[in-house]
Image (cartoon, rainbow, N blue to C red; front, side):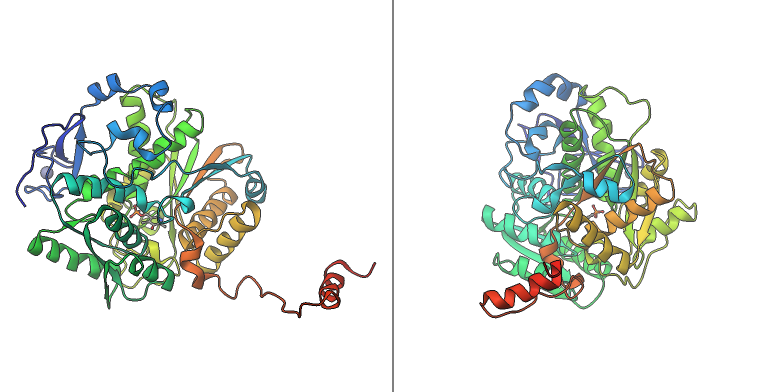
Length: 424
Ligand SMILES: *Cc1c(COP(=O)(O)O)cnc(C)c1O
Ligand SMILES: [Zn+2]
């Protein structure tokens, strides 16, 4: 695939190496040829500042695309026009349970169309893939990305391949198959799936959303941060707790907060929002490195956790995620399988939100951060809840009790009633 330039492209000029600052055209490339640094989208913030205002944004439809000037698509988005603008839920009952005063959940369990935050990154990557002329799109995935690529590719009429570890939850596998995509399950961990995808991307020239299209894909995560600030009435929270797999979402939420200042939508805050990373103990390269005071993580060879969506042993953006946590005076925590299940149940029973295992990780880690005093009881907190619980039913099946089965007789129901409420 050669370099393809867009003439219409108004707000981003190309790609830039995060390490050496070398500039590249906005093509399907993701690493610097000189130092292998990751490439990022370069924007013309001056021009964007002139194009946006809070009033203009407020008049636009409620989707992630109301921040379109800060997303790397040259023309109008053609994939996922309705994605995003999920509810920011004020959670008073969960707040009380955690010992906090002000708590919100950014509820991406109801993101359109596949019930996870991945619909944000995929709508950007596939809109951009179409602009660049790709006919086959693909991904390496821990489950949710595969679901989203499969669904959005189907709706866009693109051919798709999704590659996943063979041991994923049934709901995540079916949640891709249903869209008629090509599901390829690899016997191995996610890192091996990812390495294979790099080889396929080089050989066949497909648009891999998180390989050669990664610079565009990753930008989609910023929309979660933009929305949080707008939905708080144009205020930054004191704390955000973010689940970490490759580390991309965490770094991009930070970038989104900074960009709002660059384009004049927010004033520079006195102190930056603290960004906290949440991992599963069974695959915690980033929280382990952070707790040991290291800048670099040690890869995890054999992830062992029910939070399969977060089980990436060699996180591509791990180094930058640790930097962001340090820069913002955040923390990293991790949660055991038992704590994850408890977290899922706590969120469900206090707020009526059924999250997948990653949500359990986020709730459990937030609880630990409050208990250890690392998040102050009077500070505001936003939890990023990133995927729906119906996709990871195995995690909680048999751990929430069983229905009591009776015949269709009032007498039988009354026995249950008496058990529950005592004899009157
Ligand atoms: C992919 C994913 C994340 C975070 O992914 P990053 O690679 O760190 O951006 C968080 N939660 C869920 C449910 C996911 O599927
Ligand atoms: Zn470079």
